[in-house]
Length: 222
Length: 208
Image 1: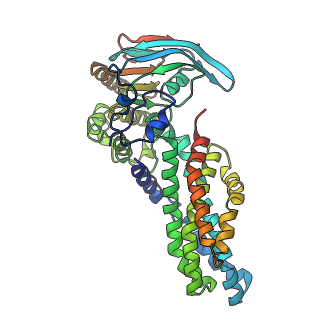
Image 2 (image 1 turned 90 degrees about the horizontal axis):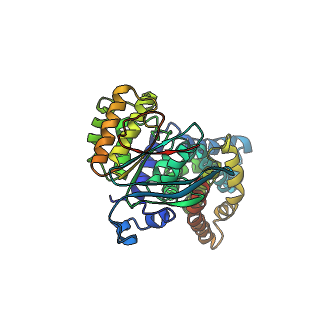
Image 3 (image 1 turned 180 degrees about the vertical axis):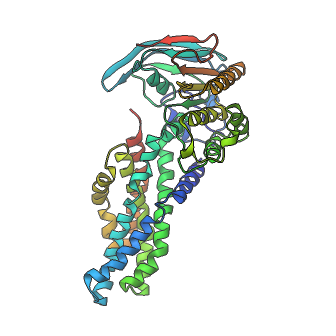
């Protein structure tokens, strides 16, 4: 199943209303060939308070962006904004391609097994064939028959990362992806991110400390 | 995409321990009323449609706290939005799944409830058709109320307050289904609720 792309914010729902269109972004932006992520003068307002403003960045294919700053500075909000989960108070985001988002919530149903949950999302993403590789990349093969309620928080985190990998998205939006991960899993994540970038993908991550994104640009908030 | 969402919602409903709750509640109400009202078969048969409609309305509200709130809390809605899937589509699928999950078992249990309340075959058939026409509206209203109360403590009680007045037209046309044109009005009420429901629920879920 081909899933519409988020060509731009604001037309998310119009795009969805025509799921039969195979490549909607070409219909909307016929001249777009690159998948550079452009963030221009972005501002975010939460609960009447200006969280940040004037954020600009430009990430070419294969690039990465690290969002750093103290707790509450707006790293998660910026990521949610990029994922289309929050409206921007000002500025704009340009990106042609598919996005995959890893938030703090795991979005795994406690009664379902890990394998069936990830298979469900992979089906929605039209990426059932990418799932085994993603499971392997996060070392989850032994856990696929385990109900999600039995998983530790680090294992759920790895499941969330595997879902991002299986989505086949061009832009990965990761909110503190190494939180709760052991060192071996963090290394697996670094490998996966490097492979994603080598294939022309983009990674944007909210981080505390180094997560192995070599040569990433940094946006400092707060 | 719509079918994939419906299938998923149905699977989760089928796996949930509350699957049998609405239909059990429905049959129990029908079983208890004869004790409360007394053994007057003619009186029971006369008020049976009203009892059954009220039971159906309350049964549609039983799972309201688990219809959308868990998906909002565990990030499922975020995952769907970030994939560019319209919330309206998600809510339409949820209405469809909720209807299949509560109304279909309820219709299957209707003969049992009918016998318990002393409904004759003709009135029972008419009531079945009325329920078939009217329950989609109840499902839609329940999902809207679930969206409005998702993330609130004690949302279930509030959802009841939201739905009950809105469900009045369905109740009136449903109980009065022996009057000419009541089926059409019932169908119209369902169509209106189904047309508005996904948009209202999506608007309530939209992150701000």
